[in-house]
Length: 81
Image (cartoon, helix red, strand yellow):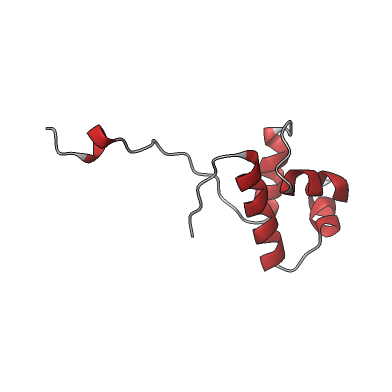
């Protein structure tokens, strides 16, 4: 299932949801990537100022892909050619 990330809060919620789906604690997830429980909690609560590399490590540990794609605009969605 694809979910749109529009803020640090929505990214944190995705990480939290995926962690809970595989039934691991924040402590265990943190140990998997070399972070403490407090840092995982900080990220899951949507706090800003976290390094992208840290987010990517967590996502990798949870088998979450990050995909970037252009937004569809009204012009792109119409047959203008």
